[in-house]
Length: 446
Ligand code: FHN
Image (tube, rainbow, N blue to C red; front, side, top):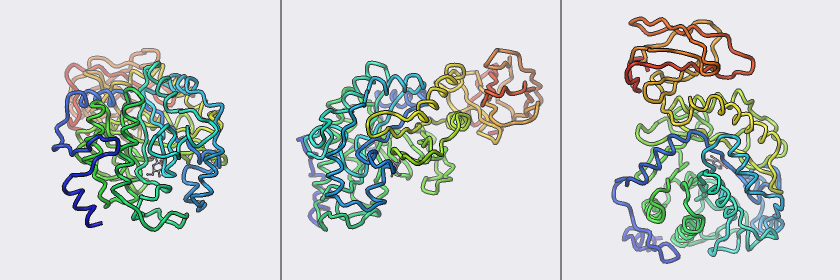
């Protein structure tokens, strides 16, 4: 371990595959990445996909840990994985209908099984299963053809690799050796990341997860982030480590929580003022396919999350867990289609917006684009809605759906909107308020 620390300190480790994983100096962000961050902030809606060997057991992606499955038994399970109904074009068509602008898919989860062809281990879907196809390649091709960006989820935590040692919080006796070479593990990870960033065309970014298993380990993040940014200068690093953002990271992501809310208990309540934000969310209570979890959120609730995420200046990354044969359950497809139908009407109040001049409230949220403020009324029973000042005089206000004028009374203390009754099929009444000057965030009343 002493030798490893010395090597790490001297920065002498090379990523396998001959690519030097050198550190990044400070956090000077080149123009390509700044543009990619802006693109990300405009995108507002992404589809998260958790899919892997675990899907076969229909009990979520933690089943190996939860049922204490031995490595050898899980390896056998992997050899039976044969998702012959997987159709990348159909998945992307669904994503397109839903109105998402990017997909983030598990290239490998904590079970360590690679859902892509990798020369670093035979424990991958092409070399280790009867399927023998690379679904990530097929998905990347379909995404590129459809104009959807593809991000790769990559688990830093590994329940299979013998060099993931010393083990972290999720340690249990599953037949792994009680020793390992951490520097070899980091080289393995960097080599797999190199493959993901050189064989799949333009990649939106890498969505890291699992560092929380060993938060104090010498992860050499500068090296890994530097490698990513060198291989694809516009690829974003999205770390789900639940901590303050670090240099080299591009997006602050919050798991099962709106930015800063931390109702889940493991997110940080700190919210970056500079970086794009994202909320990842399950549609039921599970990430990976769970055959008994029918606790699906309603379309109204999901619209509420999308609106409140945007009102907080963030994106919604909404998850599906496809079945082991490659099909997607109707509960997911129906909700995605409904969200797409909703966005076809209301998308202008979401895409390309930033958080509005009034911070999210119990009744809803505001978004803005230039001088136009979108007031999203999600839950307000009364005909009059009082708002704090928007920071600029109102020129006109009208309903987004149907364009009917909305009467406004302005005073020094703010303004009052006279709302039409909500339709039964209308989870969000959107009032378009056109102001005379810039209604910038951080105005009085936030
Ligand atoms: O343990 C994972 C979990 O399985 C899932 O991938 C989520 C997605 O945000 N992240 C982890 C927990 O932080």
